[in-house]
Image (cartoon, rainbow, N blue to C red; front, side, top):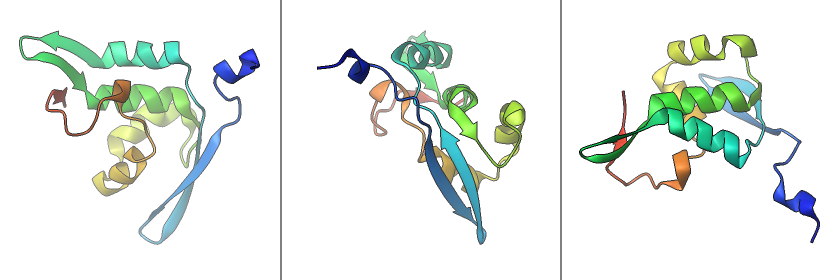
Length: 112
């Protein structure tokens, strides 16, 4: 088995989102295990209730690192994310992995 199979893919994955009759083009690269865990560390905090994940931090950090193509200037990704229509944001969210492989039905996800 070649060692290259252990590494992230170099090619970006393209996807599109339809919203209000328009189609928006995106591409994202796969993030390495280490980069993903660094982002998770920024989004996670331990409280008396357990581990809480700030999903807003997760999505912002993940998309800032992973996007290689977006309808906005990539250097303005953080600003664009803060201005997105909630319905569009929900569509974009479907293309982002959940942090740390946690399932959606766990109750310790925090939203700040």
